[in-house]
Image 1 (cartoon, helix red, strand yellow):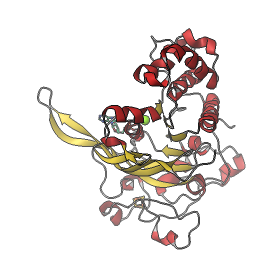
Image 2 (cartoon, helix red, strand yellow; image 1 turned 180 degrees about the vertical axis):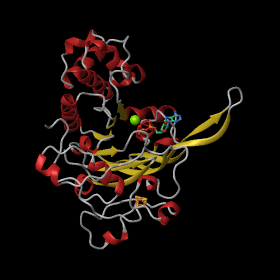
Image 3 (spheres, helix red, strand yellow; image 1 turned 90 degrees about the vertical axis):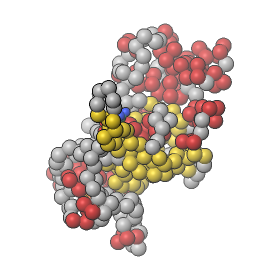
Length: 352
Ligand SMILES: Nc1ncnc2c1ncn2[C@@H]1O[C@H](COP(=O)(O)OP(=O)(O)O)[C@@H](O)[C@H]1O
Ligand code: SF4
Ligand SMILES: [Mg+2]
């Protein structure tokens, strides 16, 4: 689907700190976990924004903030121009209907004691205006059909389905209220590689059919390439680099993106031999004690003194600005430089 220019969602300097407490009877706050620490981006109507980063980078926290399962410590989330972090009561309920979530693990996110029909119809309990009582069963059957499942399965239980089918049920539930935005939190990470592509294809088809905008979260750049119009690379609560899929995959300028891309599987053996490998050593540091300056500096092979002192802003680097071209996109690095690590050909999930 063609994406419009209108920003349907604008996230500005979003922060979520969880208090870190000590003591059993009397709890004292001894610090905070900076799960999301100043994230800004826009999402246009009909667009898919891929958000990628290693485990523990704050992706799920970001997802929960966007669907209002968590309240931010600070910052704003504007839906069609209105800051939804300030809403409550009926106004909040109306907005929440429009921004739905598909969860990572279809094995744990579906209540095993509820039938598929009740799971998919559950949102109607909170939003009865979305489907009059007499119509709900019919609507649930329609939703099953839309996600490629037999409407006759309506009385079955989650354990009677495969992982891929369960995720289709989760997607049907996400669609029940006719949302405009769906936040997909690693929707295929728990699935076999062979079914990942089917679920991604289903999400793409539904996007066209229902004019949806997606934030599609993954820990692997190869998964989002297939579906994203733009990509945001996240590291330790912040965005490291943002750009169109061509800019991020073929002209990455941030060392973290380059390291992540280096781990992407390349199907063609000749291309595989030609490509440069960067080994990303160590783990993501604790968000309770993030490194000063650039958060990636403890794992960065290019780090210098300034990296420990000054936080690099997420901006188009000055030295790329004048020339324009594909390297001129936001990158939070004091020494942003182009480096091609993946041969320029699309790599989709599930391809051999
Ligand atoms: N409710 C919570 N209380 C305290 N810390 C949390 C909570 N939820 C997440 N965290 C911490 O925030 C960080 C980011 O977690 P998360 O958003 O789940 O990352 P990701 O989805 O990228 O793996 C992790 O260090 C995690 O332990
Ligand atoms: S700012 Fe410094 S430490 Fe951070 S990514 Fe760039 S070179 Fe590496
Ligand atoms: Mg997560």
